[in-house]
Amino acid sequence: MLVLFETAAGYAIFKVLDESKLQQVDSLYKEFETAEKANKILKLKHFEKFQDTTEALAAATALVEGKIGKSLKKVLKKVVAKEAHEQLAISDAKLGGVIKEKLDLSCVYSPAVAELMRCIRSQMEGLISGLPARDFSAMSLGLAHSLSRYKLKFSPDKVDTMIVQAISLLDDLDKELNNYIMRCREWYGWHFPELGKVITDNLAYCKTVRKVGDRTNVSSTDLSEYLPEEIEAEVKLAAEISMGTEVSEQDIGNIRHLCDQVIEISEYRTQLYDYLKNRMMAIAPNLTVMVGELVGARLISHAGSLLNLAKHPASTVQILGAEKALFRALKTRKDTPKYGLIYHASLVGQTTAKNKGKISRMLAAKASLAIRYDALGEDTNAEMGVENRAKLEARLRQLEDRGIRRISGTGKAMAKADKYQHKSEIRIYDPSADSTIPSTSKKRKFEELEGETSEQDPVTPVVKSKKPKKEPPAEEQEAETAQTESGKKKKKKKDKRAEEEPEEPKEEEEEMAVTEPTEKKKKKKKKKVKEEEDE
Image (cartoon, rainbow, N blue to C red; front, side, top):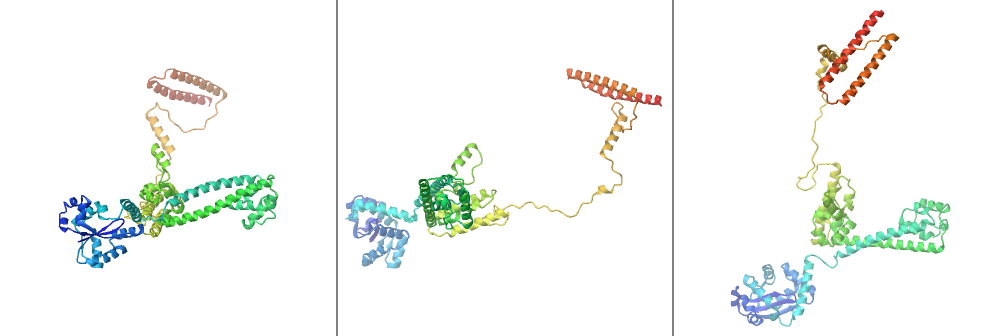
């Protein structure tokens, strides 16, 4: 029997000297306690060394996938085919089926063979001669790194560290550009303040200042390369009536040097943005389609790497970048933030304020799927990102139009329609119009009711209709005024008493109410008697 054993350094083929020992599976490890005992059972027949780590990685990946590599096929044809009558012990049943199919060799895989492989691994240095332990450990470590990198699809061309550095540098360049441009506008504004109001574009402003220099040169300078005709005419007109101060040639030279710096940084920023866009499409194409290059790069930079970002759930991706607001909301027991860095994505920006929270949640869910697909998937196309973006745009239109059509999912969260209320055009018949009795006014009804109560109870005052008053003579008017004054004095005295004695029984109030209408009746009777005497 022959044994095929693969190491990090190459393929080894052993010949079994004593097959009877293999049948004792439980006690087989005792035969491999030392290298001398192991050499009595196995003998190295052939060793095919790998030339480099690339060949070792190709052989290892072929074995993992159950395929025959070129080097293995060469070894089997060279050594094993000569002794085709013997069986070949292997460590993988799937690989044995492929070898039998292609090379017509009988392969064996059993628990005894698996135990034998473990024993060979324990005494590998003694069984394989001419391989130092230090070199073997270095080969094993290199192969382990290469194999793990291959399994996770981490090629040297696909390094997200470049994205982290590029987006950080892009943010720094934006800050420096803003500082330089503001300094340039303020500096040259002392000499030609009107130019800053006419030219709003920062890059065009710096190019114009660099070409013009002193404002007296504006009339003789052609600015059509940087400015449209209308703005160029405004600049020349403003230069003639400018209120700025005079500056020296040395000042103009320093301002021009600052403008050169601004223009160079702006050009480098455009190059860096193109580089970042290309790297994002190479490393995370689906994420780039979903949220854009800048937002995707900021998410990767915030998480540390694409693999770390892939480990985050969708809820974390949604509020990534708003940690300070989140912990402040948790501390003060207020509403937590709905979005972080994802707020700057185009899908969230084009929605109304009412739907921003919903869209950011849905976008984070789809973006987290895209991130995991980019980090751990085998394909490098952006088909999944395009499909998910189309779904989100359709959902956004549905939210804006308040539709009910289902886009995806199980339909549990379908939009609820408003309750339908039928409004009939038929009018209901009003029976109150049939009555022929004239309706009395509320005021008249109130007067009649009060009249009835006065007849039943003579103590309460009676409301009577107004009659045209006859003007009494002067003597009577004087008598009436005297009586009214005396009545007012009495009332004041009563009020004072009421204030001094606030807690009197209610019977006194009732007596006051009874005496007032009786005095009025007496006065009216006296008036009637005087009128009759005058007549």
